[in-house]
Length: 97
Image (cartoon, rainbow, N blue to C red):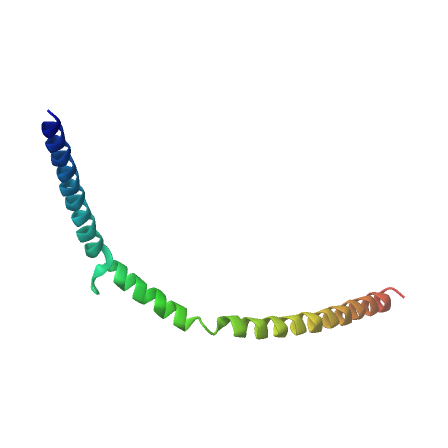
């Protein structure tokens, strides 16, 4: 009786291993179809994302320069705004003597 139980256990383990290998093989082939080859959509997407990364790699340094220029422009526009306010006040004062 012990030998029959042992053989049943061995058979169950072998069947389990066979089923696991079959499913893992299916998963691997599916993953290879998705992105394992150079002509897959995932590979093309990866290539495009690398291109975008290279094209936009200089932006962090340029943005700081742009921010500095915009701050200086804002300061200049504040001065212009004050001059325009003074001009408007003078024009209103001349109109209503």
